[in-house]
Length: 382
Image (cartoon, rainbow, N blue to C red; front, side):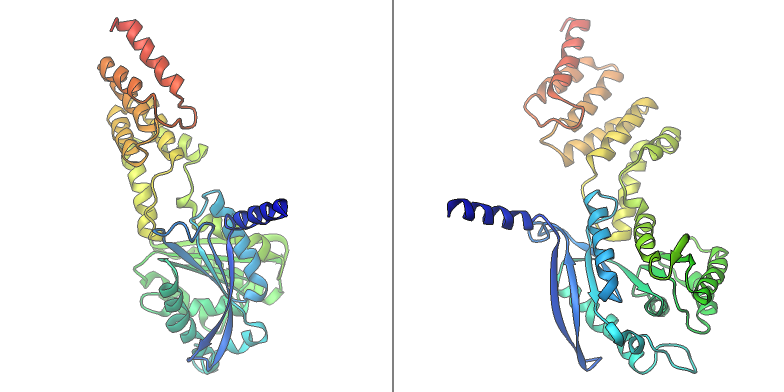
């Protein structure tokens, strides 16, 4: 019995480490009916009580929710995108009425207009009220629902910050309207469009035509990405498009890579410390997230500052690291390196020695710090 209870406890403990899936029935006054929602909360949502999360809104959640939610969980686990709340709207056969448009204006009409208001005036405010959300929303749709997401670009400001359009079945005049509307949007928009070589012919051709138009748009705030997957069908392209879209939209969020280190940091003429601050300011401005700077990014920028002999940058990076990770050796090591290189070895020695009781980080061990202190002591006879 004791073994069984221990096993059950371990299972429950383990479940808390994984994303939470919640099913809800949402009574919509706009639709005059209830809609079934499927919601995935990030891992450790309940314990990170001060953290806020972007929203990933999934239409056609009957079949799109799992691939989207799985990729969001995977990418956020490796810090390639922020942890996010995934909200799926189950539609089934109602998707055709939900996405219907007026035959004269080609904008949402009748039930389509009601569904448009349900999303913008009921569902998103409800999610914002119930959960800890950041002010960044991505929508995901496929054919009819992909076209429908575009209508939110015509709100002022647009409801969504990011649009993942998988083989959209475009309404008449949509292409012309998008080309006219997008350059007039002042805020930053992320727009992903995908088709496949084995997609439905008419949809593939219209998607390619739209790509040709969007590629030529001149707008600093419009971030556009396109894929035409070789061999992908109308339904299989989702499996390739969803991870590609998330990777591209959240590229600025990712930790500093080896490529970024080599091709950007080591070639900077401006202070490397400012590059680090700017990177996280962009993340805050775009996604409404104020996370601590990653240890990886501290090490990458500090190493680049050493290689470029940017000692004032190294001091700034070390000071910030000491503030954000005071119980680790991270900031002490790089502050000591700063004093070593700027002619104050005695200060460096004391800093290295003073960090003996702190937590080690990556390659920065206590032994490494004490060895540097001993070398300074031997070289200068302190």
